[in-house]
Length: 616
Image (cartoon, rainbow, N blue to C red; front, side, top):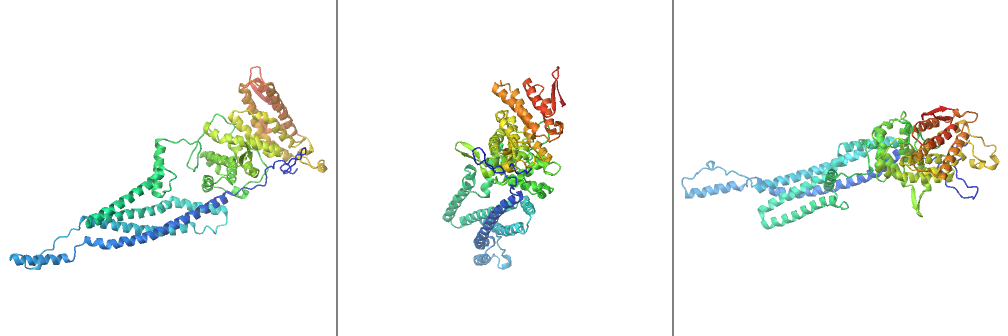
């Protein structure tokens, strides 16, 4: 049988209405490394342009400023040495003294030079001027070095063809740049010029104070006003975040202010906005859809969003950090399903990848769920008073829903986070389930029904029980033995010649519906245990559900086999539910026994009330 026969665009034969388009099994999402390279190219261009423009401006300013400082130093440094004419003046004074006093020395050797002590203002002025000149020249030197360093950091990347190799090389260079604090060095160069300018005005004010008091007062007032404006511009962004006065000094003050706020009044955030491999986000909950650690997932018939060869590469911490870098990107929601699918496969196949330990040990999966939920929410639109799934986002949503199906079995949430993440997910999966039934897409019905029933079981909701009948009908109608040739999407001419499902396809179908029917009885069990008085209509609906499950299990058996040759994994799930139902109402025991008999399991209630299980 053609596996894609079900997932094609179809017409409803009753009213000739165009049905929704199912997901495309051949859909290929963006390569995570290409996505990283795309983001990095944009950020690299912005960084290089900003860095080059800043360094060029600093070099020009440092050159002009150094020339001005040097011109003043030429004048002020003279005050540090005795004046050449001071000795001549001393000797002339001695000669005059000799004319009026015969006992005064007559030889020049006997007239000792007067000791010279530079004035205080001259020392302070020259210290500040020389420091200012030195710092400005050092700033110019560092600006030249930064231009060379950044050119070397980004040099040679364009010749790398492999997306993964390019991403790894780029990430390692960026990591080295951050480890050695190159961004901090770049940010410190303008501050060096600020310090140089401050020292220059300090020396200028001291020098002018020795020359003229009015000139000194004028320049002092101007300097104080400028200093006040500088300090205000540095502090304002920490008070008004939308203020445009931002540079390294203001950024440092803003960081310090936020740190103090977090220490004094810790802010409780429901969801993380970014994450690194050093973070740990433990969550605990009383509810878990499965008691065993094994993952039960819906095996969709689609190609992987990444190449198998790429997935088989033994990924290390660098690859993990690259993918987290993409997820942490504020503007990245489109195209991340490739990374999401890598994480899903890592969680399922622990022997095939090294990511599983990192994902679970570091609890990064929780942040991944948050990003995947954001991407899923972007795939719906609110129109005419209700939400609708965007038709061109179905393929992307299908990959995201595969991840959620696995993640729901590996991660627990406390109440606030559950409400923040899983409530919208229940809404989306319900919309997708309704759409999948209309589209007659077997894979999508099984996947989204599995997610809906898991979420409702977590929330203690039971509304899906009312919708279980059309879901089971859809799973049966598009299964191995549908009710009519139209349900298999066959033309009238070949309805008798089209081959039946092979044993391999039937086994795949059994795995496909396993996740849904592994949790649906638990949802029914929670309904019986809720203490709610069931109406006759609800009792009748539950009876119909049990009969339909029995019928589905019958038609989905491999031909010429016994019931014990089928449903091995489903029987294990049923046995676990049965053994966990010792305190459940007798009505559930009757319901569950009806379902288990078709799966080859007979539930026994002993006179002592103990529950036992035997295989039929």
